[in-house]
Amino acid sequence: NNKFEQDFYNHKGKNLEEIKKKYPLLFPENTPDSIWIAKIKDKDEQELYKETQKLFPSFSNIEKELRSLFQYITYYNPMFKVPDIITGLSNIDYDYRVIYTKLLVFISLDVYLGNEHPFYSDFPSYIKQNNISERIVIDVANAIIDSQFSPLRNRSFLAKMIHEGKKLYLLDLYLPLKSDSIKIGYTKQKYDWAITNEEQIWKYFIENKLLYSTDTKLNKRFLEEAPFSKFYLSEDRNSPGRIGQWIGLQIVHSFMDNNDVSLSDLLVKAEEEIFKNSKYKPRK
Image (cartoon, rainbow, N blue to C red; front, side, top):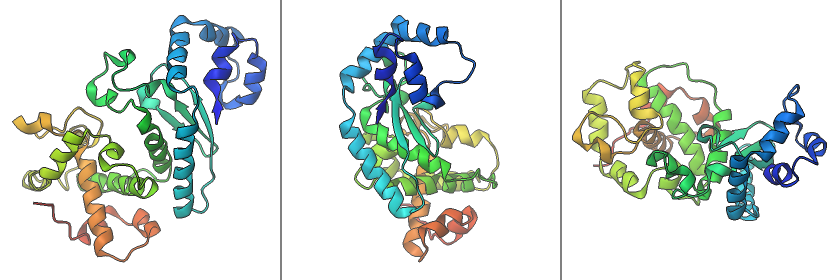
């Protein structure tokens, strides 16, 4: 693991040329050195750096988790190339917690300081509940999984749910020891709500004829990051966001339980076909 933040903030810019050689991908051409020096000396950035060092003076525990993750990924994809790990800061840009290219994984440590950290006091709770170090390996796994999928052509709500369900199914295989609620990023309470209400959720989707709808408003309501899913019922606040992804995972599990299909076949199989052969029945 290369700790870019230590190399960058520790030496007041005296080693700038050295760092540029060590991390060429992090230094866009034509950016003058003065910009980097100002960044190194910036008070807020120095404070962010200090806080990350308190929590991550070393990265060895998380590195162990990442090594195990890479072993699982390689087991299922022998062609997978293990990337270099670089840690750094992103000014708490939680949309870019982890950036993955085939050669490296860049992890923004300042997004993982703990859900109670004062730096996150203005963040909505559904965001900051995942600003914890236990999520690092999950976010890395998700970034790698996303890179394994082409964009979905089928625009139906059902296809989108199952497409996301395939990704979550891979996450289960790559991180078998992590709890289901932390993997999907739900609190235990909201995860339990999903399990208890699976039948009601499915009934709602069917009765409102949502499965084959191509209305993009459904993305925000049931598939994207949100404090809760939007059924427009008083119960909404108790639900987790992205409930459509979770239902998609249940359909994929049901399909894999009822069909003798390899993982590589699952990944290329059309979503509608998965649904037809899944024999999916929600838990009552």
